[in-house]
Picture 1 (cartoon, rainbow over the protein chains, first blue to last red):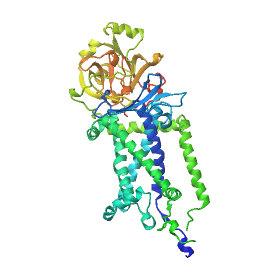
Picture 2 (cartoon, one colour):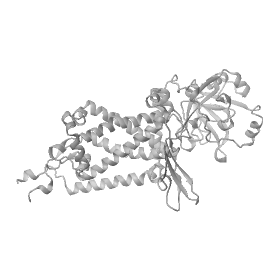
Picture 3 (cartoon, rainbow over the protein chains, first blue to last red):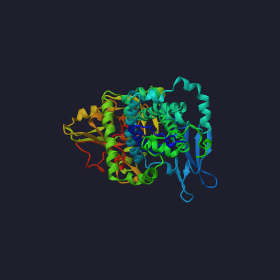
Picture 4 (spheres, rainbow over the protein chains, first blue to last red):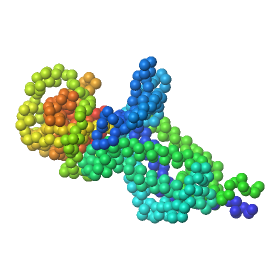
Length: 280
Length: 257
């Protein structure tokens, strides 16, 4: 083998704008999720409809005192009831049990402090939302959407194989690793064009001033309390995306992936599995 | 060509990651209280207010609902039974001796009994109350449009805010509840001084004898047990100077979201 064929190919994978956008989003999303849980804790119930039917919440997290005097965290989801002591409803160390919906380690700030949770939430939202609009405009106007994200006809024919490969954690190599596969494209399209716009719009629907300015928000989501529930569900979807995204970054070449999002440079894995190579 | 596993680059990556996570995990608590963060929070609050003012005109109305949407019981929050001796005495006589004081930067300072307020043209509206905690409740309110009352006393040109002084004290402390609206929100057609809830006299739990309805704002703006309106140029000298009881405790003066 000649030395030139062993030198890895380096491609420019992410533009500076994308990389900056990505890392600011990481900070914003963590702040938004954690301050969002702080805000949720102020009234840890979700409802469907225009207002709160306090007797029939869709979800509620509370605490009861058991017969032995111990505090138990109880989460109710529709007609079901779960004992979630330690995480939801009642949490903290054994000596310092606290009644609170989401535990202190998951909220910003840690202690119960709605006013400060709101400050963090709205500050991060003012960075997150305009950045999303800017990025969507960049994708659409700059042609990136068509070039990199819209699935091509032949990709659909390989959907089954792509799914199986992903489930077995076998990731594209060589030429295929230079662009997103169908699952990545669909996930990014869903997150960018549906879930994130929806989390922003449902957030705005909770504002009484915005409801006066844009009454269609209430009609679009079916009322303020439904919007609040959808806001929570979209945020949960973003959290799920965040966790799966980080796990896949870890298992599909952590250093390579991190470098591509920090410096932009990415080395597509060679066509063949390393152990298939002839002895060097 | 760049070597992808350049050790110095790898070290840099590792260090950036460590620094980043340390900042996120440990830093948030500390920076929460820093002056720089407070400046950013204030800027974001000001931006929200400007954006809302740009998007919501004086004609933008809060949604009004049909009677069948009225909640069976309107949830009472905050103080539900003021304990001050003066208030107890007024309540004992069904607020017949109660009078609303209106003073400050007005042409004709005056006092209005409940009967006098009820004699003025009234507005009835079925609206949704949104608490800062996250819940909502729909109720029917009847009262005097605040703008009508302000026109009757004559607001001076220098006045910028209406301050609502209340009879309740939270946590049994010495600080009375108060709130403030600027004149634009005060003159909004749905801004009422309400004396009836769901067609009956306003219950004590919901703010008897008179409470504010500012339908494009969150619940904490809508002062209950209103005793006095004061027209001011600035609210710096009232309470801790941030325009309301909860504002003095870290909540935004602009309660539009």
